[in-house]
Length: 319
Image (cartoon, rainbow, N blue to C red):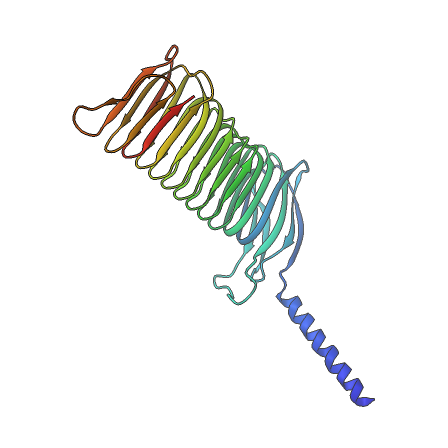
């Protein structure tokens, strides 16, 4: 009986030590709030993990979640008109531990101006009415229902956004960008990533180096699109007095007009570039000397302006 008791005691002690060890490894649980008290900005910093930021109608900021296992704590304080939220991390981190990072759910008043900085943090942000500046390195960004001034930037992560309005800037290096139902002014760029946008923005500026561009636009005042070796496929209704500018080096551009466009067309190609006109019966004029060519013509009153150039790619226009 004594031996049985000793075995039970040893087993219970081992279980207790194991639970204690797991408990010490688990990240600190967070459930804190801070009154708005006339603050106008909120700055958030998190090295790694996942952060969800949602605008709400209460006059306080609330942080709920679990900190990174290596975190030294959470800074959550108000300094003047700014509320600062920062997961404090050591300079050197234990690479052998769980690398999932902090998982935080942050609620902020809708009217606050937001600034976020992270490294390998995925960010989900929604329902803000003033401005949002989101920057991460290898994390993904998901955004919905942001207004006024929006800047989303990642290096190797992807950006997925919808229902943005105002002055919008979306940027990635090797990540892809997918935009839906945006309005206002849209600037969208990548290096090797692909760009896709179905937008109601009246001014659109899109450029890549080697990535693909796919655009669906409605009533457009201005479109500027450029690529080096990527391809462009765009559909738009160009407004009267609208402006369209397109350029490529070795990439192809297919531009499809969904309205009865009334514009002056000035298209040029150099080197082994090619111009294709599926919009009117006007023909491409080849240079007498050299491989260049041009396509000049007008439709309707010619008030809008369409300009394009390519070096060794192709520009195709159609309606």
